[in-house]
Amino acid sequence: MSSSIISETIALPPVFSITHEALMERDEIALRSAGITAITDAAQNSAAREVAVEIRRYVKAVEANRTSLTKPLLDAQKTMKGLADQHVAPLGQELVRLESLAADFLVADQRRVAREEAARQEAYQKAETERRAAEQAALAAAAAIITESQLDAALKVEQVAIAAEATVQQIIQAPVPRLDKASGQSLKKVLRYEVTDIRALAAARPDLVRIEPNCAGIQATCIPEMPVPGLKLWWEMKATFSSR
Image 1 (cartoon, one colour):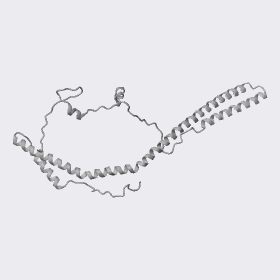
Image 2 (cartoon, helix red, strand yellow):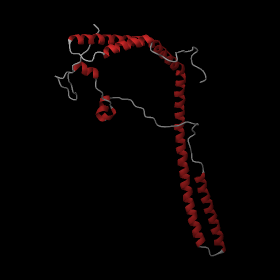
Image 3 (cartoon, rainbow, N blue to C red):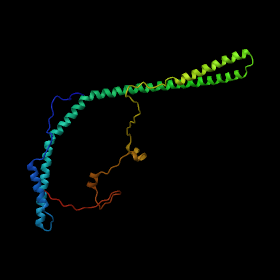
């Protein structure tokens, strides 16, 4: 395709960079956090909380800013994808239709090739049988030559054997029947499937069914005090700083 599918021009900056102010603010918070190397009393714990809250707020603000900046780009990407899909949809339908027609033709042509090959094999077997019979007759006639008339008869039988051999060679050297495929075209079997009973499939062939843990369900319903076969459950303490 020599040109764009849209008439508008899309312009984006060649690079994206973080502002000097944002870098300064991040580094200031990081230095304050790095200054806390241990928590041994309530005052240090309170100071750690203040920095942790500031980190959470800053990270949240950066993510919100990123989201607001990228949303138009993501929306434009979705719009462009929808436009492109809608644009080529008629061609996709035509491609499926053409390939279906071609598959029907090639399948029918396979049957034609099979018929012609069967006929070729049958003709070869018939010609080979006749060649062997003519060869045996020629050998017998040659062995029985005594008179002039027997010589003439043997020569005629030999000509029949030569003609039979020529017929066999003609069949062998004839072009083998082939599919009338277009350039670059191929025909192959493609597996299609539909799952009609997932439970029956899992019972018969468990290797064909994917089983994955329901992480949300485990978190919502399981506790170590009530063991579940196949699960290792334990409590773990986690300290967090809220922004309130």
